[in-house]
Length: 237
Image (cartoon, rainbow, N blue to C red):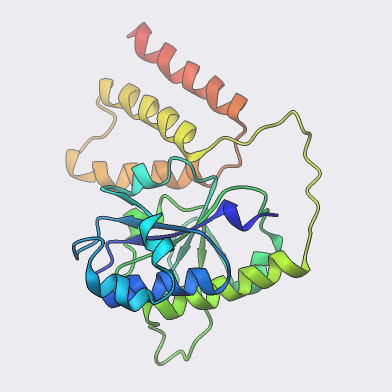
């Protein structure tokens, strides 16, 4: 297991202080990777750097993207944090379940904005949702507090556990980039037959498609086969 495989992804963070505090939390537990998606403040800025204290290197080495899809290109497993239970066909896990995650893969912990958290559309990119146990009458946690709880727990899992996964060495898991490319071919084929009808239901239907494909444990070979199938269907029309 390697801490270099773990990324902490902030989706549309709103406060400079929280970004800086998250960077500090990441360094507290010797993680390296911070990813930001469309942050509201100018990034980086003096307030972010000041709040990060001794973690300026985390800020300076972080990656910034405009969209969630771009940010997940090199992530194998996405774990979305949410204070609310989602009535979705997605695996809901707790902190203890993180012991079962294969940290040899590239893991991304996804955090929503301070004001609204993650939408169902954003959740649809995830393999799992993770809820931190809190007071049922006061569930909402500060962004940096959520991150530091997860960072501490994962650091402990990596230090104390080494769960073997008995997959063939010849089988390589598909990355999010390959799955996204396959999904884009699928959507193109479906658009050509006017599948997304009525039009106003298209965003919800796309959300459901992502839920299906992103939670599947596909190999790169399986992803290539499905991509060829969707490309062939498009050509025949």
